Image (cartoon, rainbow, N blue to C red):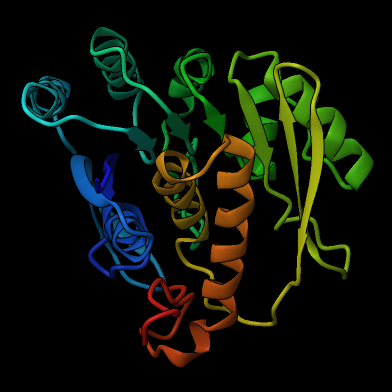
Length: 266
């Protein structure tokens, strides 16, 4: 049976990130995608020019209406934007006893535009306790812990352990911002002290728009299809690596272009 998976995130009209990237990833990895939109953005591959936040009561209505009818096997959470949205999403998912939640704590776009109000960070810390998998990049992890971003792999491991204390079952700390000249290394840490270093080649391309969205939605898509969450994370890491590797086959805009979600098909 094909699993149904939900993404709760913002819309990216350029198609490389947000809801659009999540639904492409779900389709590429064999699950049926559903969505709750938290914000509308005006953006392209170079910049975000405007953001319109969806009212919290309408976000709640989207979630409640969907859960009233559709059996959902996993949930990916992306851009939430403000404290009220973070709070209502957590409240409604707890009410519906949502399973297999992958939280990507989106704070800044690839072009540098802020996507989460600073006053919402404390609410985001509370939401971490609801997550099965938390997938921050290094700047997001630093903001969640109110620390400076790590500059070494050893410091990344320590930070992954600290993030786990916020309550998620697994932390996947993404090392793409660590410019050590070698492979792209992520750190996986769980609530039982299990640690795993995930390494994949780093490719010289500017087409990395939506990498965080795509990785987290890939994990959500694969959790219902893999024997363990660790297997799902490993396969999702491989998927995003191949999507980046093939991104130069696409020609979308003049800035940070999208990754190739359908690299296995065309």
